[in-house]
Amino acid sequence: MHRIVEGYFWTIKATMALLLSAMVVLVFGNVVLRYGFNSGIAVSEELSRWLFVWMVFLGAIVGMREHAHLGVDTLIRKLPPMGRKICYGLSHALMLYASVLLTEGSWKQMIINADTTAPASGLSVGIFYAAGLVFGVSSCVILVSELYLLLAGKLADADLIAVSESEEQPVPR
Image 1: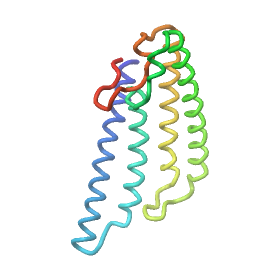
Image 2: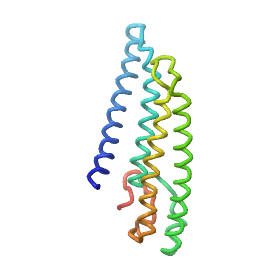
Image 3: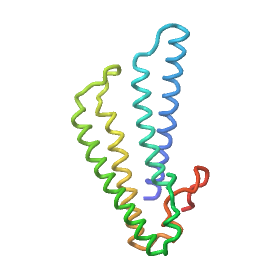
């Protein structure tokens, strides 16, 4: 199971790198064509925007798993272990609720817009909303697994502070 999970997150990271590369090529190519040859790629702006949205949602999945999001932990650090556990569980339950809402909304928007085509590319607009669905499902799985670890008593005291002190140093897991 560990191998499957690691493979999933490796695939997400590789996909993010490919999306960023494609965005650079599309935008840079369009700039060169516009200024150098007075032409351009009509689909470039639309696709680069879609690729950016997908990259952000995929990056948020990785950030959630690695606890790489920045946060304020001043109060949490002053609480006793039981208070930290309560805050950890409450925050994860609220995030799970928000993720479920995002998943439901993204699913509905994806279905509603499945037959709608984008103006420049002609692709289904449902692809755009699928990014929220992928994030929502992945974040729900991450949050449920972390709540399970909390309830099973498998989290160390240091793991109860789920924010990074800075962008350079994520909290050790």
